[in-house]
Length: 188
Ligand code: CO
Image (cartoon, rainbow, N blue to C red; front, side, top):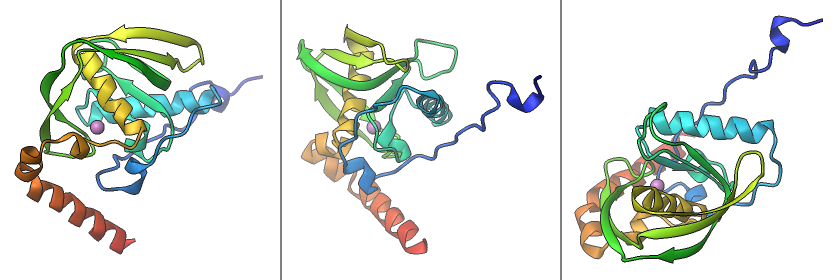
């Protein structure tokens, strides 16, 4: 016997809001994933949905309020284009190549961009959503996204990587975010 409600895929969809600077969860070290279950699958799907809806190319779990070692990315930033990559429990085991500068943005810092210097390549050990172990080396924009999102899992933020000049340039935008956070907290 079956009925409509038993159909797989009928589980209510998760929806995440973005967690913005300076929410404390962004400063905490995310914890390892131990269960590779349906819940993890749904979390990852909802993270992709949030990333695409926010026109992002990468998203780390703390940015949706989860203290979990999960990151998702798609360098094309568009569903159905480019390659999706979800990394569970990633560990950057090597960074090589000439450092380069790039103006990075971050969904937790809307409207703020800052030049960040990072090595060209990174080698990452990670698990996929099924729990299978992988190790791969990335370069170019994908490498940069991974290094940015990995920072989030360690509680490291764009504001920490900014030059003093960029910090000054973005001073009022950063202060606005802090004020917005305090107002939202006071309203709770
Ligand atoms: Co970010």
